[in-house]
Amino acid sequence: MSLSGRHILLGITGSIAAYKAAVLCRLLKGAGADVRVVMTPLAKQFITPLTMATLSKHPILVEFFNPENGEWNSHVSLGEWADCMLIAPATANTLAKMAHGIADNLLLTTYLSARCPVAVAPAMDLDMYAHTATQTNLQTLRERGVAIVEPAEGELASGLMGKGRMAEPAEILSFVEDLLSEKKKSLQGKRMIVTAGATIEAIDPVRFISNHSTGKMGYALADALARRGAEVTLISGRTTLPTPPSVRRIDVTSALQMYETALREFDAADGAVMCAAVADYTPEEVSPIKLKKGEGDMVIRLKRTHDIAAELGARKGARMLVGFALETDHEEAHAEEKLARKNFDFIVLNSLRDAGAGFGVDTNKVTLIDRNGRQELPLLSKRETAERIVDKIETILK
Ligand code: CTP
Image (cartoon, rainbow, N blue to C red; front, side, top):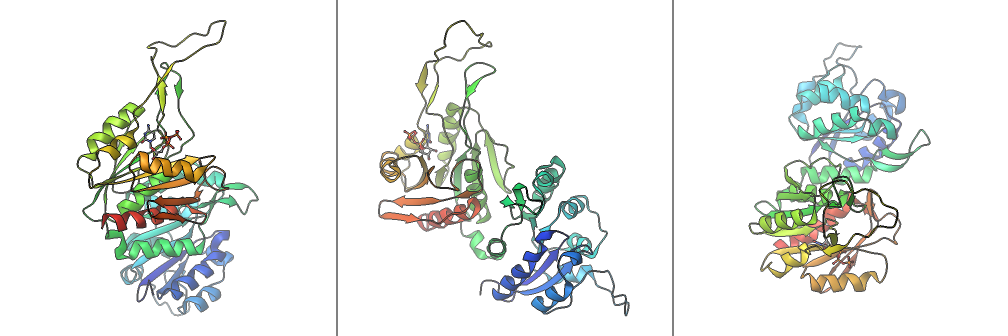
């Protein structure tokens, strides 16, 4: 059992997603963990302490002391007992208080005393989640080492569609397993490069040519590699994503900058994952001043950029190289051709024809293709897809 003998302190806050905490508790127990539950006062309105006490087989902790007999619920000893504190669901309110060190309930005082890894699974409405205040608080917590189980996109309690739904209990379980497992150190001492995001090719000081890549898949890969102990350099084109913990990030703009940076960094690396959406063409000339419109049509001559992946493939030697292919037709044939031409160890094929795969979404459906065959993965979160890709990287690096 993956969590055998581990002590998990499950914190529940006042969100409609609290009902999922019952399933989560069962899954944690099923994986062998000893689970104790701390609830905020509001959480009791969403799921009863009796339910959670029955499932966890321990009394529920809400108040600083038991009003019946004055017995003190020590946040310090709870924090010491735990191997992991998992707050699921975590509301915008609790996340804000955690980020600011507010300690007005037992869950928060325990968080401030905890020395163990802390993970939070946010759950809230899409606008609350997207609000700068919430995003800033999450970034603060991330920088302090709190692990964040990304919420999913989908229908929310408000009836709106968007990002903010708490991750499913099974996904939270695997997140906690990873957080506590030795697996995360399996790439210790390995140096990996990841390219991610979209390049920007300037036409003039105002306009540019780019593409729809958001960088999510590359960032998830950089994060997964770093969590297993690899030293990760993320060469990033345009994206709005925060840098994953312990990842060294180099921002670049154009395909040429990405090419120069990747070549330089590859020298000292054990491998590279080419996830960026690099422009294949760039304007032959960049106007130093803003181009003015004329009467007729306009023609911009484009020239080829360097194929970064092919260049690294040609000089890789014993190093490992993973590529991506995003295709709309004859997917496997195109991917196999790129696998050979760019000298990849394996290639990750995305088809834009698959629902749930492609730009901006949090899920992906990919096929891993190498010279020995193919492995089709189901529709998974980008995070889970990244884990599977890193599993394969790990077998090659060993
Ligand atoms: N790639 C790269 N540098 C480029 C173009 C692509 O490193 N200038 C990498 C991508 O990061 C990806 C792989 O090559 O890992 C495949 O990219 P893709 O654009 O699909 O392949 P192309 O060779 O450009 O083929 P086409 O555009 O014709 O599909």
